Image 1 (tube, rainbow, N blue to C red):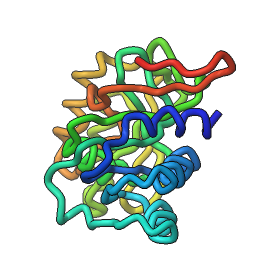
Image 2: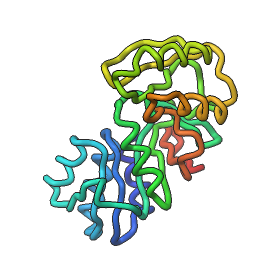
Image 3: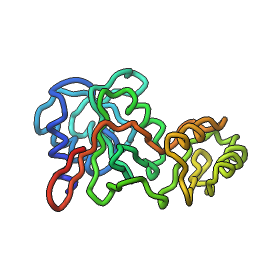
Image 4: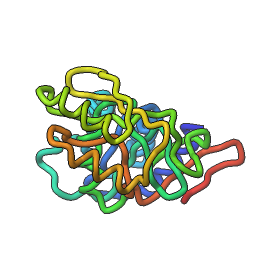
Length: 204
């Protein structure tokens, strides 16, 4: 399924320009297909693993700080709904992923059908990228919003909600807490989803 998804994504890759590639196996397959297709693109990526793959393939990689506009970016996610809202909570590099997403004219999520939901569920935490010195304050404020907080490491807090408030408001309230750099909730960031399933590809 991951190869099928990557093959479909290749059709969206321009012949040249700057292209964002996130992390994960599907993205690795996409990088291989880009090389095979002979596309003259330059890659920007938040993932060290993807950077290594691209450099091994001979695809040029540019640092994110050198870029302000990306033609299209591809990434995976933990879950995405039919309104194009997504969680990217697993990897812990969502701040840089979101920077690249916002630079991009198109931001496309590549998933298998098991990760598509009608609405985002409650079983995946929203991860907060924080200033370490603010850990206690951010924890207290997130709890006031109804979250149960678990410390992943010095920079990352996992916040679980049994009942989620309206996503737009939650996104705003979490990012408004002093000490929070970014959240793993990608609210209205993606422009397209390519989902691979047993019946083939679905694009929405």
